[in-house]
Length: 313
Ligand code: ADP
Ligand code: MG
Image (cartoon, rainbow, N blue to C red):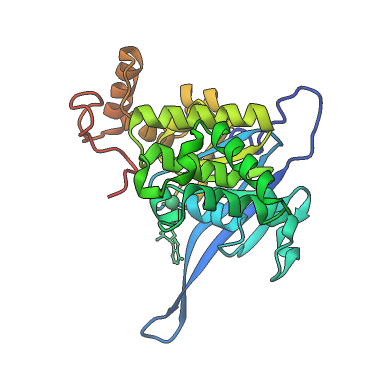
């Protein structure tokens, strides 16, 4: 991990080593692309030699522009992308050892929230059905307990009980993401992979959802791998930040350190590309941009219209 100041996410408790909940060790993700004209099997390496750990109850923010391999890392942890080299250990167990049949405990312990709840939620199911199914997938519940728990799950993510009867299209983007979070929390997971969960939301809704995730972490002790293309977004909720560039982790360390004193030129570019309200910080970024020879408009010049690194096309 060239340019990485801290190889692993620190324990942070000051009370010695705690075994990490998740350990990603020298992960390489390679996709098969089928055969080319020469008949040789082709591959694409999306992630190269990436290592990090996440202790229980902590958040690792993973940032990088579109195509840098963020989702591939999330998917490899969820066993949806190949672990071509290296290892993924959850609670000390190598997930490669699971073979084809993923243990029920892993399916319960590791959940995911995707960027676009409109496509991750079933459009023909009410909120009650969606959350109810997630609740009963791993636990036997009477109809009455199930209803009670659905109401409780909605309340926990800041939705009213009447939202239970709504369909996804009847909700706002932020409300849909709250439903997706409630569904992810229903099996009482220990880790949630959040793959750009706020990227499709407007800025004020983004901060509400981030605050909600932080509250839920304090309350429930769940860990997050929080993926975003915007360093500003992960900064507030992450204990540690890893910066991914072309499939490699180019920098990692405590969140404030990476944000305030980025060691890697790519991290400075990511920072410079973010719109900020703070004029002092903006001046610092403008200087960084000049130093890097950036050609995009200065942040804040035309709010909302400046291209940002990693913005989905
Ligand atoms: P990010 O989430 O940071 O945008 P991804 O992990 O989605 O990045 O993609 C990383 C690289 O891997 C990209 O070049 C992408 O085109 C490629 N890729 C992603 N998924 C697949 C796949 N299933 N098959 C082949 N290539 C893929
Ligand atoms: Mg992605």
